Length: 509
Image (cartoon, rainbow, N blue to C red; front, side, top):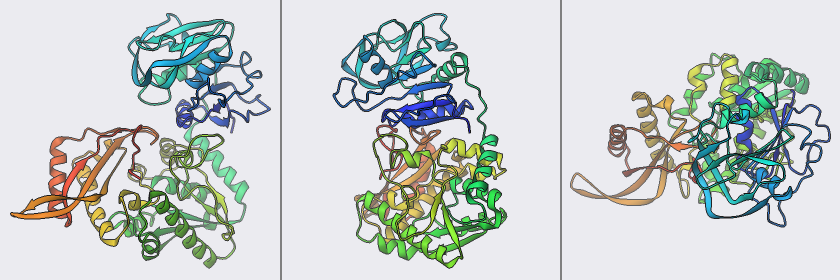
C-alpha cells in the first residue's frame, strides 16, 4: 500500500483525525512520531505536521529536523506545526491574551489562493491552543484571520509550505475537508487511489501471505468491526478461521442469542461461549473504571485461551481493533496521551501462546463500514451503533451486580427500541444508557420511592474522536422517559446528557 502522505505526530489527540480526513479523500497516509521521521521519503508526496499538547516555547517542546522536508516537498503545518515554523524560523509565538479554544469564524481570506479555493469568509473553524503567532516567520504571507487570531493561516513564499492555527480535521471546521483537499490534490497533486475495494483486496492478499495455513481464532461481538474483520479473514483463510462469541454477562438484553442467529447465514464458523458468571465474579466489588477494563480484559483473554487450547494448532488471535481503540489506549507510532485503555489492544500475556492479527488496525469506523459494504455485508449490520468492548460495565458507574446489569439492560432496550420505532436510530451514531450511582426521591401511586437515576446518551459523529449530542425530539424523550420509569423496576428518574466530545467522552467511564 503506497504511503502517499506522511503525518508527523507531535502528540495531539487529533492526529488520527487528520489521517481519517485524508483517507476520506481516497488518499492513503501513515503516521510517524516527530522524532522517528522515515529515512526514505521517496514514496511520500506531501507532509502534514500535527498539533500538540506542548508549547513551542517550552524547553521540552518537540523540535524535529525538517531539513529533508521543508522546501523540498509540500508541507502543511497544523496548530503546533504552524507555531513551530514561526517560532524557529524568524517569527514570534507568545501566550494568547485569551484562550483560543472552540468555534471561530474566518473574517479575512486572501484572494486567489488555491489553498482556500471554495472557502468563503465566515467559514467556521475549530481552535485549540493557548499560544498564538504574533509575528509570521521569514518570507511568510498571511492567508487568513479570525476575529481573535490575526495569523490564522499563512504560506511561505517560494515554497509549497502552508500553515494554519486551527484544526481542519475536526468536523466542527465546516470546510476542513475542502482545505485538506485543496492542499493535497490541488497543490501537492497527490493521487486519490485509496478506496475501500482496494483496501479489501490488498488486505486479503496480505492476510493470505501472513497467515498461510495457520489456524486463527477470532472474538466476534456482533458489531461492525469484528464482523468485517471476520469476513476479511474468511476470504483469506476460509475454514482455518474459528470465530467465538463470548457472553460476558454485560451485553444488551437478549444479545447473546440474537448475535449467534445473526451469523448463521454468513458462512462463518461461530461458537457461542457463555462465560457471564466468570466475568461478573471477576468484577465483584470493583468500582474504578480502569480496573473494570483490566479485569474484563484479563478474563476475556483467559476464556479465549481456554477455547484456543480446545482447538488444535491455533497460532493466531484475530481482533477487530480499529484506530480509535488504539489512539485512546496507547500511543500509535507517536507520543499521544492515554485517555483510557481498551481490553482488545496492547498485546497478550506470556502464558497465551497466540500471535495477534488485526486487519482493521489502521482504519476508522467510517472506513470499516465502507469496507464492509464493499464485502457485501448486510447494511443493517453495518449500521449498528458502536458498543464498547467492556459492555455495560462502563455504563454502570460504581461496582457491578447482576441487579444493576438487569436494570441497565432493560433501560437500554427501551431506549434503543424507541429510537428504532421513531425512525431515529439511523440518524444517531451511538446511543446508550448509563446507570448512575445515586438514588433520587420519587412518587409513584402516592407512595414515596427512592430509586436509581439513569442518563440517556445519544451522539452524532463520524469517527468517535469528536461528537456532538443529538437534539432528540422532546416528544420522544418524554415518551421514552415515561416508558423507562413505568417498565423498569428500580428506576424513578431519567436525565439526558447534552455534553459534546470534547470536552466530555462518549462513554462516562
